[in-house]
Amino acid sequence: MNDQRFEEVRNFIVQNLDEHPADIARLVADRFNVSRQSAINYLNKLMAQGIVTATGNTKARKYSLRPVLTEFTIDVTADLEEDVIWRQRVLPALHGLKDNVLGICTYGFTEMLNNVVAHSESPIALVSVQYDAAKTQIAITDAGIGIFNKIQREFGLDDPRQALLELSKGKLTTDPEHHSGEGIFFTSRIFDDFIILSGRVFFHRINTKDDQWLLDVKDQAESAGTSVFLTIRNDSVTTTKDTMDRFASEEDNFRFSRTHIPIQLAIYEGEQLISRSQAKRILARADRFSEVMLDYQGVTEIGQAFADEVYRVYQRAHPDVTIVSVNTTAEIRHMMNRALANSGEQDASIQKPSQGVLI
Image (tube, rainbow, N blue to C red; front, side):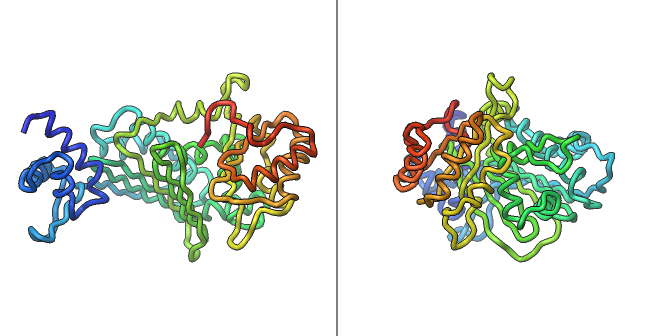
């Protein structure tokens, strides 16, 4: 096998092995028009290089990428320096990452560990770093008050789910003198996979290759502290700067002036978006931004009072805030247009964000 051919097969195996642990040899044989034995020879070479491992006998053999795992516990003190922990304890465990991926990992780790130091009230933090040929995963767990419980308490919110909604908007912090409230907003968007598990709330955001996103929010049994899980593909082309630039504008001196609100975070089980109070919760603190994208992905319809509060009442009271709506159904646009007609504004279907689709 020549080097170029082997590299093509290697990349194919790395990208597909997680989803095809038992039939990866067949997949390789079909994709590259080689015999099953040749495919197994490729896998054996990757095993010899320490990239792939296998379990089971010949007929029931399953392959997987060989992970490299580093775990340690640190005492959380007021003078803990997250960049020192990164440099001394995490960075030595990572090898061969592209500069952009390393930059993403640096940003995410230091931001999330800083949250533990500044807000968690936890005496310790458990750090786990695992990478293989396809992806890098970072986990930070503390034994503190819990991020959603802390936000609920500090801001007098109704419940932890509302705390999640506020956190997702950005610019939310319990210590505005020392923190901007941007860390979780951007970390959840630069990683391919972002999870927060805290208290009774499980939040999972997946950023897909086609610039779309998927959310999973559900209640769970009460858990202590907060766990954050970050995953990035090693071949990712995302950069921290590009992601941040999508939420800034030259007119605002490149500050964080655009936000993106997934509307489904405001919907409780069995609810529909029909009331003015729901609209007010979604738009709370929106006046801190010059552009607010309301993303209706996963929402099929809204009520008249909700639409009127968002597109007529709020816009009339906040003319300097541009509201952009995306992923709307025909039913949603109908209600939006009714509200806009009452306010004398343009048709809702032609509204567009000022700089592409923000995610």
